[in-house]
Image 1: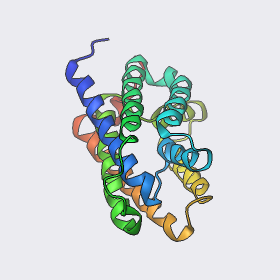
Image 2 (image 1 turned 30 degrees about the vertical axis):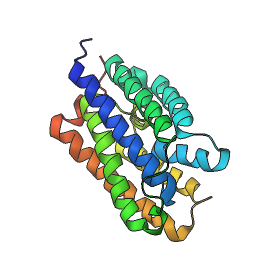
Image 3 (image 1 turned 90 degrees about the vertical axis):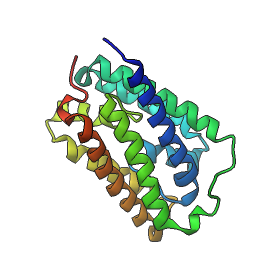
Length: 204
């Protein structure tokens, strides 16, 4: 496998961008994400486990589950992105949030949080990896069950958002649906700029 320096830089910068947004917006706004990102925030609330730790562990399990269908290159790039996300998030946790009053502006938090997630994840996926294990898990389940992968993505996001309802009031939970919809569309848009989805995660 040939790995270019530009690809590594792209993975590092986009994962750092994602961690910055997740810490400064999602962690303090009462608005969550779907998938692995949302699950790490749920663990942070109920178990006081940092997303830097839970995200890394969950992603590793997802990559192990999906490596047969995604290929070695995708897994390698995803491990780089996931590791950088955890490192960056752990660093950002050492500082006070930039917008401590973000909780009072849920719609703005939903939109801008989605931009950080959509661009951060989108660039990683376009490069050939993913900072979260959602792609690995969804593609692996799709391979085993023959269910279209976009339905698995949707089911996973909805399940995590419903779980998040255990600590996020329903009056605010719809903002999480807004951010999930926007970030999902943005990930697809950014991804299509560089390559088709069929080339991402194909077996090597």
